[in-house]
Length: 159
View (cartoon, rainbow, N blue to C red):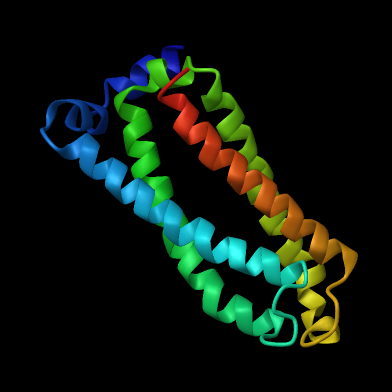
């Protein structure tokens, strides 16, 4: 609790709380960031699960979709951190916030394991071939965790 109190006392938190339009502007950036993250990530995950197998290779999908998802993540993470700072104790006290943070951790771990693992051998299974079970599992985990992150984010306002 001391850390949260300290965070709320930082210049950033005070700026977010006290400057007109800042919090609502951060919410807009956060939503746009989430759209840019989750939309392309979902398309990529669906490709891993087999959708569009004859239309686009996994490596081409990654090349086109993942840079957009990374930019969306950066926007969502920065705006989300600033909003959290403005009301850290209240937000942390909701039932959904710890679940959202845990799901973000799972999503991050899933991305790291995918890129450090099965994706390193994408050349062997790219194109029209069915993705290996590890790649399909990563896609499924990603779909579930990002859906949970979105749901928990909305629930923070109501719990």
